[in-house]
Each structure stands twice: as structure tokens, then as C-alpha cells.
Length: 301
Length: 338
Image 1 (cartoon, rainbow over the protein chains, first blue to last red):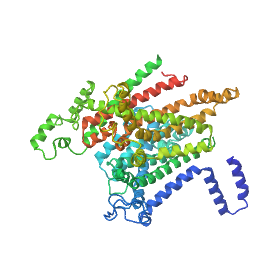
Image 2 (tube, one colour; image 1 turned 60 degrees about the vertical axis):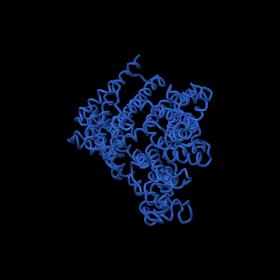
Image 3 (tube, rainbow over the protein chains, first blue to last red; image 1 turned 30 degrees about the vertical axis):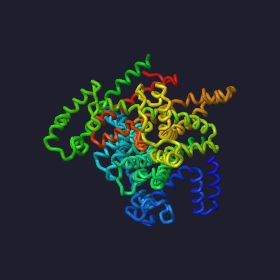
Image 4 (cartoon, one colour; image 1 turned 180 degrees about the vertical axis):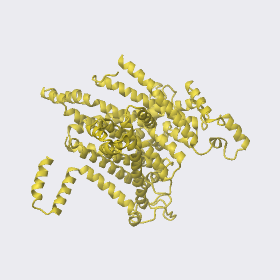
């Protein structure tokens, strides 16, 4: 189907200006990948929200106002205020800074650690280097993840950076495994042999020739990962071991709200949860969309 | 026979992983900042008291001796004594493990019962409104924080409509637990013919099970959908249809049978995640299970208790994986184990 559309587009494109052609191409991309585009829009919107927080937020995020404690949503405080009189809407917006930055840094760090290690493990597949790495990764993944996260955050501390390091540590094994599996088969390919024949050393072979051909499975994984990272960060903060109040963070806000929920104060935990769902949903949709893009048979079925 | 041998070898091969786990847990706990003795005797205790308690707990000895002593106890089935509850860790776990098992097993049953039919229908009606609906709900399910959903359900069904009892623990506070047979309150109260306790236990289970059941039906339904789509476009299914075999037989006997392996895999993954990962829901519903015990133990630097929980969860998870691998052979006769 998409081939016909492309052919039609090409015959049209000869007649229209290149600018119009670009917008046609963009529209085609959107209609062919609605999931990816919807996810990307949500993700970019939340990133912009965090970036422009001082402009968008009507109140400062950490200012306690004893004259405005636990107010229900109203035109002055559209999402209400919490038990310290802080504006829930403004805090949700500022929290995007923390949660989105945590998500993206976790992904970056786990890729930086997991990808090269995976390439090395795959290249030396079956040797002692490979089995030592794999047994270590097995142990990390067999560990109850949330309990390990609570333990390690307790050691490192509760700064945002500590939470990032812990979550990245929990997630790097998935990249290691993905890249290892790919390199394991690619090392026997012709281009690998060819590269070796012209005199490349092991390191150069791994990082210049094999790795660039073996990283495509990490993209859908990384987006999925970003979503998990937000859920995990919020979960840690929810039980009081992650990011601490008054720092605006979605999980910590839900926790604060939950303490006053039985008195009917639903808004302080309801709205931060919605923001979180949009963020995680955005990343999950991007991941689904990237997989479809990578494997078009998945989409058309 | 080959299967039994395979299972035996797998059981042996988990020993090094378990050993590594005890090692990691033991040393991570010892790097935790702070002194558990101070939590035990209070911050203002006399230095001589602190010293003697440290000695009593064996914390004055070098780390490797402490670790060897722990391993020695482990071999004899002794997980040590909890600093915080003062009870042997084995006894603590025996009380809390059934609470977690009751919650997670019921949630898994609920999740599977809803997810598999939804996944199948979604695959059959691909790109129809039903399919879009299922995909929307399941994508929401994997994106939603379970503790938030739990709080929302409490808000609606307890605070607003008073349809369920207060979300605190496994029974009404005035009620004493049924005589311990299995430790699962629903089953024990049925066995002892205690109707009131049974209904109280069920009422307390509704919301947490609904929360976990919804969240974890999402990945199972997604996996079922994609496995069924593969299976339905496969050769055997096409031939079965061409032969005029009844559609329901085609779907269940030819389609689902083929797609079952990846579905069982995701069920096992979700279940093993739940065993150590239902902490947040346990916190929301004040459920006295393993997860909550673990978090309290970490906060109190209760070394033996944390080690005990981690070991118990890991052993259970590894056993679940083993069962899955054995199930593969049952599901798919083409798989042989060497």
C-alpha cells in the first residue's frame, strides 16, 4: 500500500514546489506512524513544559502559603493546593523538570554502560569474559528490582543524581543483552571477516565495525526504559526513599496527597498521577512506534 | 526422563546465582551508612551498652567471619534473628510470605482471566474498534503507576461510596486471623468454616487485587495479541481453516496452542516481578506482606531480615522460571531438553 502512495507522491512532487513536497512527506509520515507521532508529541510537550516552567507556572513551586492550605481546585488554583498550601498545578509543571531529566539521564547512562559491555561480551562470546559478565548480569536481574533499588538508594543518598545512578544500574543489563545477542551473530559475518583481513585490531573491529551495525534494537528499548525510569523514580519517592519534598516530583506529590486522602482531599494525588501517565504513555507509544518503523510487517498485520 | 534430568541440572545451576545474591545482599547492607546497634538500643545509650550489644549481635567480628557464619546458618535453615521484630527471620517470613502469595496469586489469576480472552479478541478483530479499545486500555495499563491506581480506587470505593472496608491490612481490625493452615486467610477461613472471616478477607482483597490485576493484565494482553496474530497467520491455522474445521477449534487448538509459549513467558515474568515488586501496593493498602517487611527492614538496617526476604524472593523467582521452562516442553513437543 505504502509503495503506491509513494509512487503517487513522486509524480505529484514533480509539479509542486519543494516546500509543499516537504509538508506532504511530513503528513504521510504522520498518517503512516500515528503511534510514534502521538508519543513524540506527548514527550516533547512535557519536555517543553519542564523547560518553560517559570513562564507557565502561576506560582513558585516550593513556596508554602499557610493561607491557602488544602484548597480544592478553583480558578485561582486550577488543581488545588496541598497540605502546605503549595500550588499543585505549578508543582506538576516544575516536576516535569526532575522526572523527565531523570528518565533521559537514566537512559543515557545505561546505554553508555550497557552497549560497549554488550559488544565486548558478544565479541568474546563463549569465553570467560563473556560468562563472567553474563553471570553478573543474571544476578542483577534475578534480584528483586524494587528492593535492590530501595537498598542502593539508602546507601547512596536521596539526591536526584543518586536515584539516577541506581535506576541506570538496574537497567543497563537489558542493553548489554540486546547488543550482545546482535554482536554474537554479526561477528561471524563477512564484513567482520573483511574488516579483520585488512588488519583491524579487536577493539577497532568491535567499536568501529560491529557496534554501529548492532545498535538498532536499543532504540525501542530506550524509550520503554525512560517510561520505566519515571515509574520507578516515582515509586521510590512515593515510599519516601527517593526524591524528597519539597522538591517537586510526581511520586512524592502523590505520597503527600495520599496522607490526606481519607479526608476527601483527592486532587493533591490525582493530578500528579495524570501527568505521570501522560509522560510514561508518551515514551511507551514512541517505543511501539519505533518498533513498527523498524519492522513494518508488525504494523500492517 | 530427559525432562527430569534437565530440571535437576537447572536446580543445580541456580546455586552459584543464589550464592552471588547472598554475597551482594550481605555486602550492600554492610555499606549502608549508620549503625544498626544504635537503632536497636536507642541513640542515647551508654557506650558500654552499645559495645556489649554489638558483641552480642556478633557485629564486632570481621566481615568475612560474619558472612561465613551467615552461610553456615543458612545451610542449617537459620536465617538469623530480626533486630527490629526480635523474632527469628524464618518465623517473620512464615507470617508475611502467605500474605504476599495470597495477594499476588489472586491478582495473577484475575489478570490472566481477563488478559488472554482480550488479547485473542483483539488479534481476531485486528484494526477494528474492539482492537483499538483493547490497545488503548492496555497501553494505559503499562503506563500507569500502580500505587496511584490503588489510591484512586480507595478514593472512589471506600472514601466516596463506602463499598469496601477501610484499606488497612487483610481483615477487619476487630477480627482475629483464622487458625493457620496454609496462611492464606481465604482458604484457612473456608477450611475452618468461618464465614465472617472469609467475607472480611475477601472484602479486603478486592481493591488490591483489582489494582494489581488491572496493571498486570496489560502486558499479558499485549503479548497475547501479538502471539495470536503470529499464530493466526501461520500455515497450520490456514490449513485448518481450509479444511473447514470449526472456527473456535481453529482459534483455540491451532492458534492459541502455538502462541502459548510466549504468553506463558510473559505470565512468568510478570509473576516473578510481582513477588518482589508489589511493595507499593502493599504500602498503599497497609498489606502486611513481604514487600512492606523488606522496606521497613532496609530502613531499620535489619540485616538478617533483608537478607532473608531477598533470598526467599529470589529462590521463588528462580523456581517460577524453572516451572516455565518445563512447561515449554509440555506446550510444545518440538522442544527437547538435553
